[in-house]
Amino acid sequence: AILALPVRHTKLVPTMGTWFKDLFGFPEGGYEETQSRIHVWQETPDGPSLMQGPNRRTYQAGHFSTPSLAELEAAADERGGRAALQGRLQVRNVCGEVSSLLGSPENRHATFQAASQFNCLEYIGPEVKPEDGVTGYESDRTQGPACSVACGPATVFRNYFAQVEGCVGQRCDRQLNNLRELSKRLGNEPEGRFFRVLGGYTLAKDNGLCALNAELDSLGDEARQALRKELRAGLHEDVQVTSTNWGKCRVHDEEQIVTQVFGSACSVSYSRNAPRLWEPFARLVLSASYEATLWAALLTALRHGGKAGSRRDLRQQLPVDH
Image (cartoon, rainbow, N blue to C red; front, top):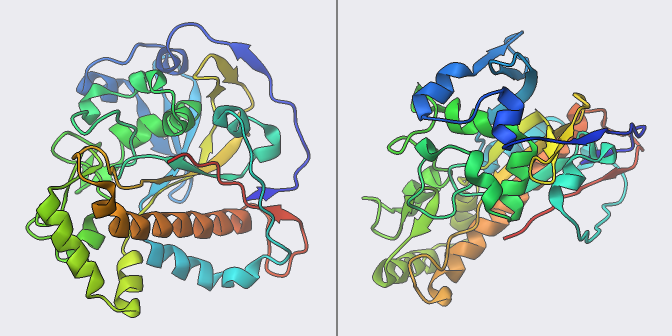
């Protein structure tokens, strides 16, 4: 959500070298070495995560969580739900490069949906792993990696410092899976009965998808809605925008803060199945992902100045590319 805030001009200057090295003062190397050279801390228990490399530049890496659609809706309901923000919803189709939107002062405190995988990372294929690092995101010229490079410290946090199964950082055998609870509720056990998730990608055989569709067909409306509400999204709140144009132009304004929601569509083409076999499940997942983003945007708007009953003009801006 975008608040009507005073516009401050953001200074952009060309960068040298890779975006990762420019941020932290050293090139990304092996997983353990890279993790050990970056310091992450919070100044208060409820404060955002801060991040610093050997060059001693401090960045705001925000708050990262993976709430379910049900949890986001409940949190919004506690704040007044859909009625918390008055005024008419406006929809605009915007054509442009997403990092320039992230870096625009007009979009400070906006919520952006980023096309991602179910592990909240940006992989070009299911065989990629967290140990491969994040510098290479700049070679994948799509919307999700553009969002991630623009908010580099937050991206480093999700790869190297996110809590997974009680441990710090994602690894090849320990990754976030925002489909896990939905998958269990659906009866996808053992994993692979209907589909499996590898590197954040959904993979399946034709017979598994046929069985999945039969299961979905057997569900009533109430059960289908309950299933949707199990989907989780990567919510990275109040993260610092550090660059635009794939790291080539640094954003020096430390107050250029946004919220990003990392949602994923089903990877329909990677198993070479007929798209129609994926369609029922893919539609359910995608609609839940969009709804989760809208609830997150409402909560962000309230956190940054929107109040119940406020007449301030608020707009939802959700650049997406699936």
